[in-house]
Every structure is written in structure tokens, then in C-alpha cells.
Amino acid sequence: MKGINHVSKRVFVRAFLFTLYFFISVTLSAQEIKKGEVLISFSVRQGFYQAVINRKEWRTPQTITLCKEDELSFSIFGSSHYYGDEAKKLYALVFKPIESLLKKGDRLFFTPAGQLFFINLSALTNESGVTLGDIYHFHRLSSLKEYSQSKEELPSYTDWLLFGGMDYLADPDLMFSSVRILHIHNMENLFKDLVPSESKDKLYFGMAEDGSRAGYDNLPHSRDEIKDLWDLRRRFGIRYYTGYKACEEQFRFEVRRTNPYVVLLSTHGFTYGDYSNNESACGLLFSGAGHTIEGRKLPYGLNDGILYAQEIEKLDMKGATLVVLAACNTGLGIVTQDGIKGLQSAFKKAGAETLVLTLWSVNDRATAAFSKHLFTYLEKGKEKHEAFELAIRDLKRSQYFHDPVYWAPFIMLD
Image 1 (cartoon, rainbow, N blue to C red):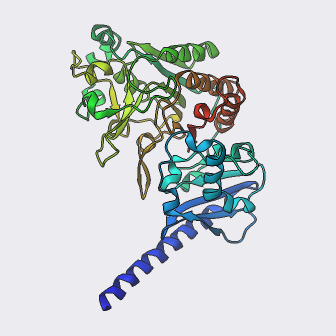
Image 2: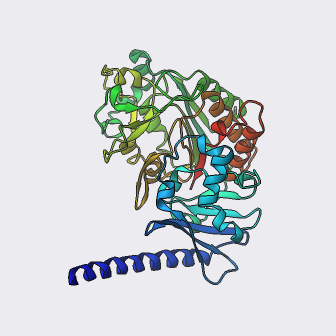
Image 3: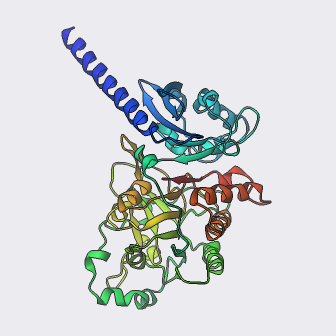
């Protein structure tokens, strides 16, 4: 009995310290909260989802219990929860309890927890059938410190790096001709593959939904996506790579710049198995990757065309103010105490500031349209968060892509 009491005390102390840390974190950030902005920290505590909320005008943050943990134990992947009663049900579980503390037009800066990592809050529908993104401005944060770190708007001279329209079965001779100069300069440390290549039976490319970017076939609309963005900005500060030129080592080389830049990766994303603890749980494909997936080693010392998260996190991308991952399932991963372990954590470790990610297999045409809208607004000088919201709005209002399956998978993360 004494042992049981001892264990209970330790559990209580840990719970108390965790709660204290949580309150201190939110309170410290509250000193810098601006008017009209709300800081929300979601957590899973003792079998319940909770939200710690703070505003500038409050003396102390408020803690709201949302729902039981097992009420979100069902699969929330895919678009099925963003329609009708399903969307309203999810709204009632995770958002309705805090809505009385919010005001229309508030900017909500939040850190997810548990299954909330895989839910696009802005795409949920309230009891009146209104999408939450039409009421509030959502800012997803990878950690609380992201709120206090002031970010400058993208300067007009920001470079654009565009990779898309890959040829996954490109001629290796042509590939080597495009990156030969990089290999001549003996940059083995830069281009060395850190993860053994996996055969196609061990890579999962998502479930296809109406022409999605699942699988590893060439993407017919991806090349047009890059062309459209090139037409937007035919002046200094833009570089693009398509076809056999969109090689893995070319990407590794280009992102090593120190001046501010935006990068678009229009390609396939993949997962490894069932997100076990394997370090190579996810990644992105570049030209030539099809050869590797089908078991053929690329000649000339070329990279295998598969860029794993483990390799991404070792890149130097401190100049990347925005990385757009226009591929399937790029926002998924393993939930840990420090957040999600996956592509988003890898790019964050590499130094990227803001990411655009996807929560399920995205449609090829819709993704191309989204990228065009997003970069059009960036070219017009819109701040990146506003540009993202406007791009989503345009999809929702369009003739072909108004369904949530097309626009709801896209999230932005600071």
C-alpha cells in the first residue's frame, strides 16, 4: 500500500509540474500578445483534451476541458470529417467549448496535441454551417516560442526556388549531365545518401482520391504548375527545375543560400510502413526516384532521388522563409512529446521558418491551382499568412475545387 501511495505522489508531482510549466509558458507569452490575438495551447491531460487560452486583456490564462481522449480515438485522417454532421461533431468536441472566449476576426495562435495535429481546425463547420476559417484567422505553431519570435514580411527581393514536373524514370545520363558540375567539385558530404534505399513494397504513397498525388507516376499538372509560377515572375530571383533536372542533389545545393527564399516542392510524398520508430519514416521524391524504388541503382554516384526526413534535417535552410510541400501527406508523422516527428520537424530542424503541409493525399489539379493562387498573392506583396488564407478562399469559391477534399488538407505551420 505504501508503494502505491509513493507512485501516486510521483504521478501527482509530475502532473503538477507539467501544469505549472504549461501556465508559465502561456503567461510569459501573454506579455507579448497583441490586441485581437489569442494564444491557445492544446494538451492531453489525464484522459482529457484541454486548452489553455490567453488574451492580452486577461490577467491569467483560462483552462477549458474539451472532450475525453477516447472520443478522438477514431481515425481522423482524410476528408470525411469535414462534411455535414461529421464536421459539426468534430467541432463540438474540440472547438465549441472555447468559442465563448473568442471574438469574430480573432487571430488564433495555437499549438496542437494528440489527434489535433491531424485536424484542420479552420476547415471545421460550426452549428450554423459556417466554416471556422471564415470567422477566425488560424496560425498553427510548432511551439509556443514561435509566437514571440517576430517575423518580418517577405521582402520583395525574396528568391523563388521551384522544383516540380519531375521525371521519376529520367534518363540517368541526362540527370548526370545536369548536375555533373556539382559532382566534379567533390561534394560527397553534401550529396551523400544517409538512408539506405527502400524498395517500393516498403514505401507508402497514400490512397488515391480522384487524381491525387499518390503513387510515384509522373504528375501531369506539376510541370504546368511550375510554368505558371515562372510566368508570374519572369525577373531576377527565380530558379526552377523540372524533368530530369529536378535532381535531389540540385535541391540540396540550391537551398544552401543565405539570402531569403521561398521554395516550392511539387512532387510525391511518401511514408514508411505504419510510422514506426524508424528514422526514415517519410520523405519526398525527386527525378530518378522511380529507378531506385524499382530496385535499380542510379549510376555515376547520383543520389537515389529519395530525400528522407533524416536527410532533410541535416540541410542548411536558414534562409527559407517559406517551404511549400505540394505533395501527399506531408503534414503527417509520429506524435511525440515534442510535437510531430516527420517532414515538418525535419524542415524545422533544417532552419525553415514557415511550412505549407498537407494532411492527406491531395489532388494534382487542385494542388497546382492552390500553388498558383498562393504565389500570385506573394508576388503581389501579400504577407505569407494572408496569401495562404486568400489562396484557400479562392479554392473554396472556385467552380471545380470548392469541395473540402481539395482545399481542407492544406495547413500552414510556423
